[in-house]
Length: 353
Ligand code: NAD
Ligand code: IPM
Ligand code: MN
Image (cartoon, rainbow, N blue to C red; front, side, top):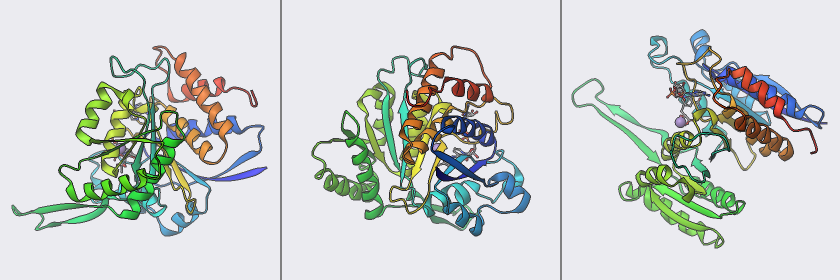
């Protein structure tokens, strides 16, 4: 038996609702196999902050680091909650984990599954993966405010782009492209305006590309990329881009792929020095929280990415197969969060078939 230590951070809002279903699917798919999950749940997020003032205490972070993987729901309190003024759970918890655990490859696949209606009228083939840089760029938190509250206030957010940081994610994206049939990589930036970071990205993409002659490389400015993603998503196979561009493009990709309730992700530390973290692309959705209205499919598919990452490829494929079967037979019926979990479990193909 192989014991996998899984840290679970359900978080806030719909986070716990969707993670509950992902955990049920994990238990169902692993039942009768060699791998068992040993879970530790960490009560972190806005609720914890409101109760204790803690965002991510160092001892808990160290405990999380000792796990094989992290399953994360979503964080974020109710917008406008005055008790959260001055707190930043997103930075203090989610981004801190991504940065400290060197989740430099934020992998966000976008596939329009059969039976799923896209927001696009004529989507064509939608099957691409965004490799979003996860540890630097405009997210670095490098900036400040001068003379706050005055008419001469100045606020800066300085994007940090290191050669090491760019090269490792670009290389990961080329490797990802190599494993896919179309062998195509589109790198996305805004080199016409962000000339400094743009030049560094360009130099590194070109240098790494020379090692991957089997991969066709093209470049798009991020604004144009949004046009093509909506008008002709079939032209994308693998994309690689900066942290902020990747954030925005993957919500757009979520909408194209049938809705944000289906969009999964992995925050990967490919070197394996730290546990990778798997989470739906969506947030805590305060507008529907606590009502069993959230679609848990994004969380379930994130768990499938996790199984792949842990070397449990056939279990991962069985989860995806079950999700595909559920999506095909879904129809128009509005189902609750747990009902969708039930349906996916019912569709799980038996082991070894
Ligand atoms: P959101 O993704 O939470 O919600 C956007 C819209 O999508 C809402 O209408 C919501 O109801 C809907 N939606 C989201 N997930 C859904 C699901 N599984 N099924 C059905 N509908 C779903 O984005 P937001 O409103 O911008 O952010 C809310 C909070 O979440 C903020 O505090 C934000 O910072 C945080 N957030 C956290 C994460 C994360 O933890 N990874 C990601 C994004 C946003
Ligand atoms: C996401 C979220 C996060 C991000 C926020 C909540 C920090 O939007 O995972 O896409 O911007 O990366
Ligand atoms: Mn986002």
